[in-house]
Length: 252
Image (cartoon, rainbow, N blue to C red; front, side, top):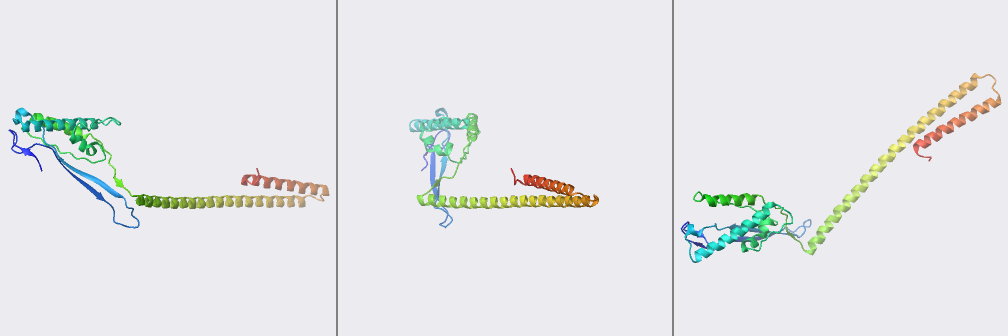
């Protein structure tokens, strides 16, 4: 289907651009764990006709008009690529000035990966220089392609159901982890309280021993002294118990 013609520069000169487009739809094999989402892709193979000058090609009539259309579309393509290479977000890029840029809009600045092959010739330094400038601008274009998915209502519901199940499992795991952490914290608190109670029992035992020794050491203690000593021991023990209970958080 390629349209070619003879000029002074080339016996089989391309008289038009050629675009071959293939639309690919794919999805995973039917399975219980796979939803019915369809991935849609477009593959564009483009062969651009080279720019030309009428003075060099000697084109007249139809060949001359073909050259005008080729140069115009390439000029618009160069403008679009120049705007895209600037990388400014939200800028307006006019794709509608040419059929070529309108067809290739998604391939240039849309959701696509683009590869451009630029050919040069030693026969024309000026055209080679222009081609290299075009290639350097095209190299600066930054696209962020993502997978195009077309999903049915059943596929959307199935995917949401999987997401809900996953979130429910994560929530249960988090709750279980928190329970384990709380139990470990309570066990540490109980161990600390047990240690404080053992220390209190040891102090009380030591005070009792001191009180018994001091009672035997005194000769003929009066009833008043014995009562006073017992009251003091009770007061000291009560103070110790209150202090420990405050440390354990049992009293405010």
